[in-house]
Image (cartoon, rainbow, N blue to C red; front, side):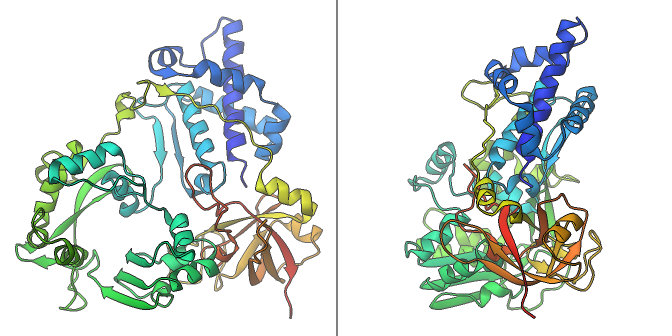
Length: 484
């Protein structure tokens, strides 16, 4: 766990060495020299950094022998068109941004961006994750987006950056944020450091949840609390102009319409659009935006989107076609939206002074690294059953997957119960008790457990550099035998 950056950098280093050997033998290049020359910037500095990197350091940090790195590099070098995909396993570590940058570097080395059948493919999850960013809904909106809002609607948008999930919790804890408004989701259970998240929510003057189903976040609330029931996407959303469809964007950048097919659970339910537009009309009025008019016809909202985003021109006509339409990333056409106008190689050093390394220096081989994961019968924080067919676990979730050799080395037996304690620097005790040990084919020194049961173990300030993403896949922990 946490060896991704070192592994990918090792593959890149080996690909460079294979190219050096090909050049020396006057053979076919391994690098795509034409792509590098025409489309890239910074390759020379990147190559120099790779050549200076130590193989023993890379292999040790990756947890993968040199021979396996060599095999992987040769496999990659033989590929004519390669797609690199990744999910949260790559993103929830301290060096996750550097790891993804290194993966991009590796793909650029052989011209595998903007080539048919090749490219970078983050598995970004459900349509809210994908669509929010496309619509500019983030804590650090681009200045060009804010300028466009200003020009279209005739007001000056706030220019200060907002707060991501982790910083929101901190701001609620210290009183800077007093109102929490949740549009769906289960914030209390999806976030790290569960007891501190609970404390943060309870520190608010007001918490508001727009929800299709009750969840734990409705029970962990501020001094005043509202639950606003709403239609689900599977329910028919009938407004003045008839049933309404919302547009969603999948992880392949396809935008299409989604209509509910089930009768609403109640005739009193309002749609999310209706609720949000009603709040906007009550607070801002309808002078600049006809909020209530948009409720009656969602196509009018898509017309507004088209005014702000050029990529959504003729939005309603294009989305009405079977399958919708594709939002083409610039890099697919080898257009580089960077200051240099080129695809930029980024140099990142292999960091050795990490929280995991510091914890291991204190606790030696007693220190284990935990990752959280979801089970088979689970969607986000919603658990449908206690079975996990992916991993052969049935009828229970409070389990800890562990390598057989680690279990014996630590003096435990399969099926025994343990308590888990986080090793962190802030003096706060973080623990999760009563987990059953399950022998599993997982690398030595590593543990696996389910989300959200082990969220209390993730320190609030244990986050990825740059992105501030909680490091849910690399938590330093110790195990103790549970009390009877």
